[in-house]
Length: 548
Image (cartoon, rainbow, N blue to C red; front, side, top):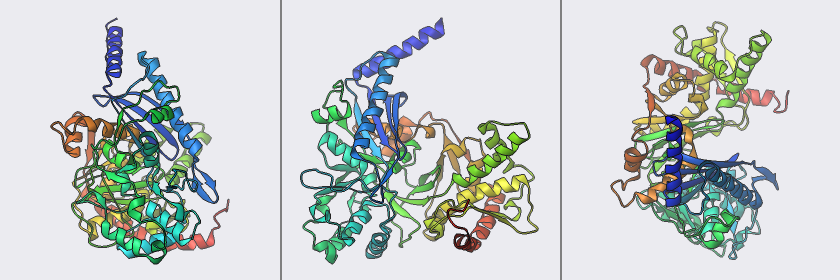
């Protein structure tokens, strides 16, 4: 009876917070899901909703339609609002603050009447190689193919008819925010994936803008770049209010009322940093899934141009270096699946948790060789810019005298999965001497305690922390950024201090420090991995992509 009374009391408490507007809402547009997360003033998730979607090819380019954007947003919001009413008996008429985030980069271009000129071009498109190369050389600053400025410049180079009509271009988060508030702004982290940001001013690099405008093919246009870009805003800056039209666009039922203050719209890299408490200088995070990226908040600009390192900013405007690899778990999952099939054939099928846990633990058993015993694996299911590979061919190789054991095999699988992202990380730590105090790992691979965490610590020679809150994801991180609007006039004026002192003060975590023998073993494996990359080029020439 006491437990029932306690549960009822908790529901009543949250219902009161909802009525009082002590909530913040974060909505993130991911590549496969739009997710809405409502949190209370203690940062706990009290309701959520989502909508699954997928990009499609339109005129040969990856895109999402505007109908999908708004229909998906409304579905995710309605699902969350229904969750609120079902669980707490409250209709969601008002919210303390709201924030939107989305996959970064890409290209949404509009004319002076606000009409979309060409279908949304997402970050997935790699048709901008020429623009990437020319702008990187012009600025002596890496401009990846997926950046918004690369998409704009490629359209200029291609002499696309819509270019002369452009009055504004932005990212997906910026587009949604603009339509709901009327404000053409962008969180500085998301803005840094459109065009380089000066970390001292938190505005666009003016020298680069002048160089871009001076290009003959750009100078011939009827616009100047600075007039096309959204205004960057640092975290904690009010970014406009939900208009009456915006409220109806978000909630067509008319229940949600206008006037809610919105946070600056951010990119998914920034919300990932917030969700892992990795915005302080010399900290970072490693996000591991189908692809993987490692980010470190820098103390200063890099001394040289490095194509292996993308430079973006935190939501507070501090410069961060990113090593991004297209390949991570696909090959590993295929091998684990093979072992699962074998177990089934033996008449002893096992669940995924047991299968992964058993195989992963074999990789750190006492009898494994630190360097994988001479085994070598290449996890490239798709092309990999960091390794100079236009296409992927997963491969496993070994010398005749290699020590072929289950533990060494699984260790080689995990070592190889982390090797591509290590390429860019080594550029930062070994060539640019970037200092890293700690990194936070998040993703399903860290579910099995210690294994991937200790191997990543060896790969980067840095302590790796895994937090209980890391699974919350980007929508939760955006809700936290929206909540930060309440805290900028209080004690925690600095975003890093706010996260440490408010959001994560009671968060549980585990840390694995690098073990010397594992570090030496990984470096030996990585040297062989790098030396053997020509095998991949030969495989690309010898094995057709469609071979089955």
